[in-house]
Length: 278
Image 1 (cartoon, rainbow, N blue to C red):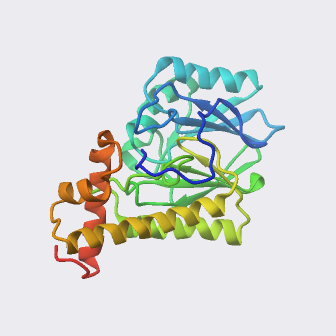
Image 2 (image 1 turned 45 degrees about the horizontal axis):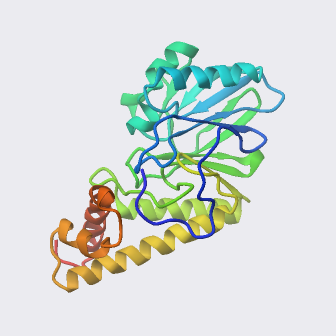
Image 3 (image 1 turned 90 degrees about the vertical axis):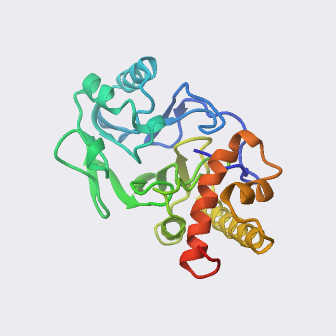
């Protein structure tokens, strides 16, 4: 789910299905929109010499797309052994139950309501399937249940909607919280500095080869937007709608409802820190 700004210097073309790293293959869902960019990226992840694969975010409830994901894995000699969710928004998770029927897999997620099977996901969990290792990284903020998956063997991280391949994500108030989101971005930055992560495999948009640069941009963008919102309040704009009309005046109005979610989260953050009156 995208906000309005574009990442400078990053690809602006559409994502194509296919290999992104040695272990990750993207199957693009046919659900493009202003909010989903080119569509949802469904990721098939596996060790090159293994016949088992993990699917991250089956995507929308689109029978054709779900079958394409299965077919893509089978053509590569892989059997899908596990389904994971980065978060519960429908464009990522609506197809999960049907996908589980097609593949006979469990669905693991942070939110118990999204799980199929007894196992959930939590901070510090390490998932191993067919020699593949994925490390669960809590990244709340876009939503309370948002997770990322660190793929150390490819020096990559799968970020769902926490970091996108183009544009910036919405902090989906009230479930999403700006303070949590900033902490999550710092956590991802630590992966780029301390763990050598170089590549971001996002939930929407192109793959980003400069993970640290993308996360630094996101942090700078959030600081800039927060300052704009604070200034707008000081100028007398009080309601979220008024702030959006002022701060996002140069943005397509079709994106204003999404921008208002982020503005509400920013106003809450400023009030929590005593910067503006609630």
